[in-house]
Length: 314
Image 1 (cartoon, rainbow, N blue to C red):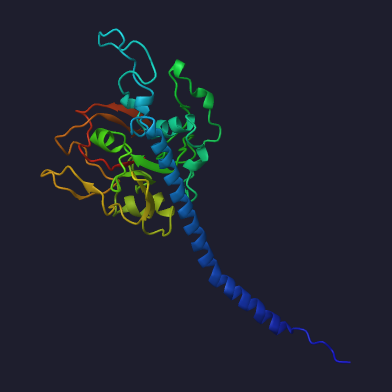
Image 2 (image 1 turned 120 degrees about the horizontal axis):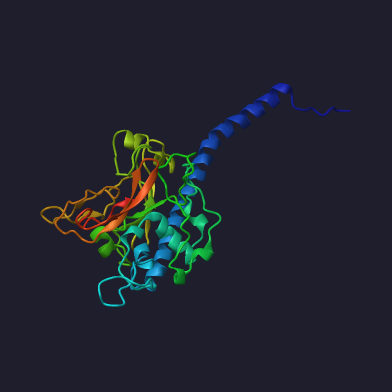
């Protein structure tokens, strides 16, 4: 009777070695594919958030959401120049309301999207976490409240200090002429609306679009997409198309307010203030002070971006 021949130990070891080699070759490719899939999903999330902004704009004269026009200052009903009554959609803009936390929280309170869509699938920052217990009851216009004020955007505060950020994404700064002219449904392929955060070191209070030095090389945002050596980000423009970029200078985005009024290439994460005679309107910005941010009221004489419309915060 003929005996069946099995694998020898050497043959088994060879097979195992071949399998291990194949796994070693495939794992980096699989990891790369998985990361690319997350980057694509991140792009889709940014795109969906902007779509929600556009839906809002359809009901508000083509204007994208501005917290200071949702929760306004008291209206002057007596005609004496003194605000006396808080009334929805009546009264001057409250510029101190125009910052990231209020923008996102206002959209959630109006049920344009949920909190989970605000956290990028590639997020690496421990400070950035989903706000899971959103208080929808906080929306009560009769009591002059329009969103859950506990929604936070302390993006620059290190983890472990009790601060957090409840969104991964940057947006056009709601300040100056840029806000008036560009923060609307203008179908422009050149005006960035939302994006991956720009670069800055952990000690930098503002993300200034640096492309050299430690503000760039040590920025946590280099961990979000693709390589650890170069910034890669998703940018959604006002026409709702989204691009994955490796530069802060999109092809069509230009600085329209140089001294001779010519258009030059512009860094979407950089804005020099008081750089143009056209002062525009005032606004607000998140400013670091010690271990916390202060939301500071800004007048046109104190803070302007002229016609620069492309600075992205946070």
